[in-house]
Image (cartoon, rainbow, N blue to C red; front, side):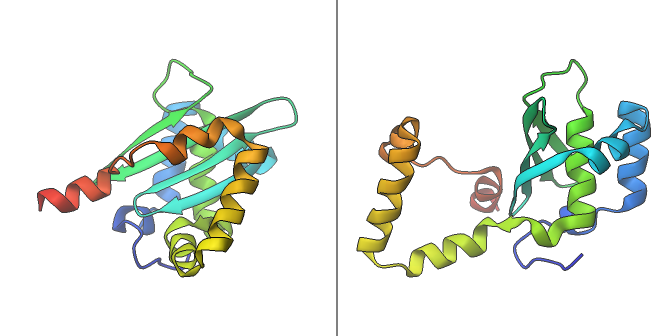
Length: 154
């Protein structure tokens, strides 16, 4: 897996052994088989966070993992009572095996910053026409991410 400049060191150093152990402990080894049969789309990486839509033809769940020091916090829309579900484990396997397919949000933001205003307005218009519920995202104040808060504290 190629290291990414601004991706967290814990995320870059994640091993198959760690994920396999978590898989066995949290979901009785069902994470690997789910990863092998699941559709994993919209996979992204941004600093210390990976996310994707994980599922199959019947159901899809939005999964997000945020890595912090030697631990991570995960969320999944399946809302299983366990802290770690098979969707979270499948995302970890995807990161280990397919990280080059994850959209690097930091690189995408760098490209967006180079665009001229008319092109940006065109993109925003397309987004809002297809997803009018996103309008409030463009009108609300941006909140800091965990990694940005950590940098402010240091």
